[in-house]
Image 1: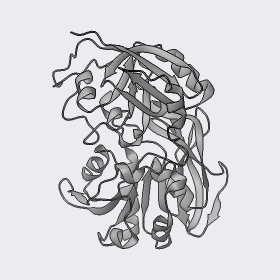
Image 2: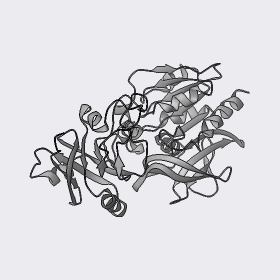
Image 3: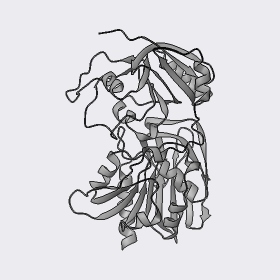
Image 4: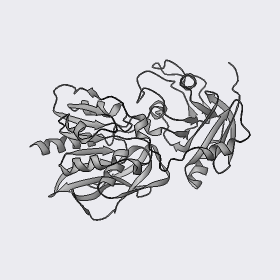
Length: 372
């Protein structure tokens, strides 16, 4: 086996890490973020919410189970770069069909290995997520200048780049109970799958779908998915029109941020975000604490206490992160009845814990009540 060549990781504040080339050889740029999950790297790589981000894995060894054809959350890898401390020398899963390194090379993903990812993570926690470049092969003399010339995540309009271009349908498993229009802002494959298991026929629509496009499905409810980029760049007038009609709504991650904006709240960029499968969140409607899967760098700025009057009803914060009190969910009630809700995390949990799977059942109950 040929030894990898040298590689360089350059942060926008000038800090440099030297390591070995991993995956494709070349150069790449993005926002440096860290993921605290110890498993599920294939799902992480194929999550469209990571578009234009360089992901630093905090687990010390990555690649142990190789790559298979079943666990991808989309049809390709979306991360712009990948950083690991120690690539596994062997793949040991019976489901594996190829190594992670082979997959990164095949899809042209530039990475770096052999660096102190713990030191890098501590640096990002201290200084915040920032632009980064990974260079292998011929390293340019102006590497830092190239990093500084790369686009920032703040103000980035990205969901249209990862969304489906054509509508498609995921049929209900067994008897069809409901029809849902799911606006794809970077949807993961397990999300419509989990809805389908509950008897929902899911019509997945492009990110730029109009009210007419959504209503053509004749949905019992509308779902807005996770996705990448700055939520302030997305036009929420379509969502506002649906809320005004009283259409039951469920949003996750980016869909939670858009729900917040539609209700009149602002959004802001977190210092380093939440990314991983071990984030504690309290559902304030039940008092239950859940361990949840996250991937977001923005959050909703909404009052934690009391309710806010909106043109569509009374809005309250339903979930909060127990690590830093970030808003993790919203509810909208009209005349005391739940009309719409959202959460900032990933109840489809691929990869991750299944504590929040009940939210899909809550969505079913909401649609059932609206149709009664």
